[in-house]
Every structure is written in structure tokens, then in C-alpha cells.
Image 1 (cartoon, rainbow, N blue to C red):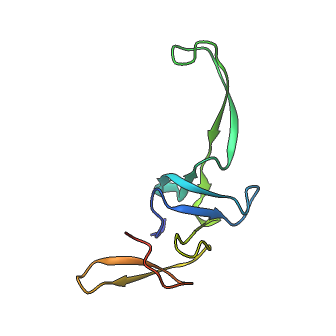
Image 2: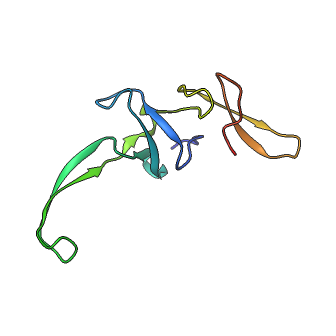
Length: 107
């Protein structure tokens, strides 16, 4: 388990695997097992039986978790994948920085 600088709703780019180069927003972080679920990436088809929720059953597409080490944050300012730096502002607030352009990522 590690401490990561990625948050929900951040845009990330996959850096390895079958979806390499694709971008998406983080839907969910699963920190105990170091995985993230990214919107419309790492999709698998699941067959479901008929139930009250799905009266006819069928095949649904579901996003599966990716290892957190396989994604990299995309800077909203320069639109490049980047590492993250941290800094304290004058008012004592800790913010995340883009290592490429130096802009503050947090709002």
C-alpha cells in the first residue's frame, strides 16, 4: 500500500497495457489493493441472469480496476501526463503541482 497523489475525478492516461495511451476520469479509488477504476477503460462484458433489475438478463459492459501504477495524471493546463509535486501556499494550504509546467492542479 502506498500514498498516492491521485484523486477521484482526475483525468489520467494509461501508460501500459491494452488501453495504453487512452485517457479517462477516475470513477473510484480502491486504495487497500492499490487499484483505480477509470471511466470507459479496461471494459469487460459480463453475462447476467434475469432479475428484477434486469428482467431480460443479457450482456453488460463493466469497467474493471486497473493497477494504480499503470496510470499517470494528466495536467489540466498543459494537457500532458506528468508527475506530481507538492507545495504549501502562503496561507498554509497544501496543493499539487504539475512537474512539467509548474501550474497548480488543485482548485
